[in-house]
Length: 148
Image 1 (cartoon, rainbow, N blue to C red):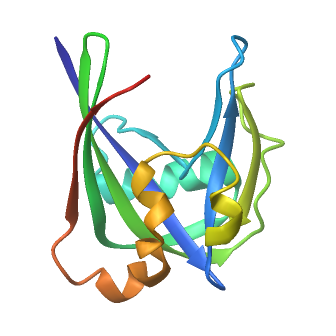
Image 2: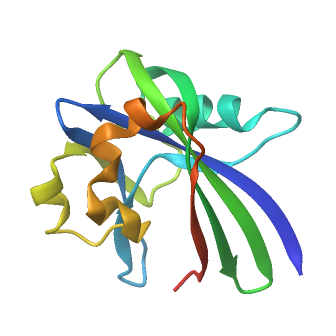
């Protein structure tokens, strides 16, 4: 078994959350907060800031840990930290994203979110609407799940 750590940025503005659309050659597609694995000696907070910038362009400032999630994908077991982030500048744009499976980034209202396949499932609860208010509280553990 291999192990890893990743982080995502939870960016909420005007009651909408920023998500990235991943579309793969086999037809699999879904929306997730911008994120990815840690690189070198960066912290989970630095990783979230970098991943938001790489996948969606805006510059953000990190806040607290909102959710912690464990995922198993084949022989990889990893922990993902979802970090509250505040947008400082820039609009969502995926034109410079090197991965061709990242096709779009945009803000979703809770109602719009129910119309698309998204991960983690906890996005559907709308608790992210108050992410900044909860940033000072202990993060919520989302559990262990298998990547489909």
